[in-house]
Image (cartoon, rainbow, N blue to C red):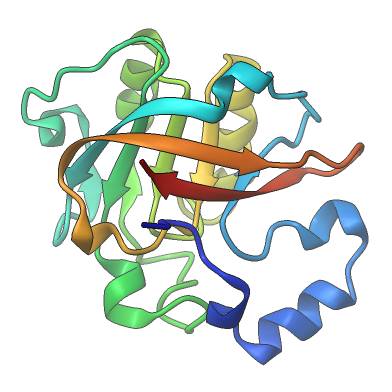
Amino acid sequence: MIISLEEYQISEKLKRWRDNQEAKQAAHVGTHIDVYNHTVLEEDLKYVRGVVVDVREIEKIGVEHLNGTELHDGDFVIFRTGYMERFGYGSERYFDIKNAPHLTTELVDYLIAKGVKFIGIDLHSIQLGAEHKKIDIYCEERGTYVVENLTNLEKLSGEVKLKLKFNQEEGATAIPVEIEVV
């Protein structure tokens, strides 16, 4: 099962926007890994343990919402807010930069301290508005990467094994990624 957006799931409006951007910006459409500092990801990151955390109906997602989830060094922690399944990718509500669910900085710091390699979410960002890019850079500088716009999370729970397929373009600030549950 694939938990990344496929081309047919992207609206024509977003495709037109993407097609009119520089390559380094265009990769932010669809499921992607943010790398504003152009960090080159290692090949050994292609198979990872995933942990799905159900945070539907929670606006401000904190450490307490992990509910004792056991985390390991190198994990991919996936937050299911329900926004992708409720509002659909590309909708006005999906891209709401003021009222969407978001992770607290305390939670992000906790995940980084635990050695989490990827923080994934079924939204456009793990934090709101101007904090979006700042938190992505903050994570990247600490060896943790934010993966945005995940889908099909309603079909997952608990621990999963994930295969990541990505081809990193030089100079891009995002890496399109396909993620498969194996």
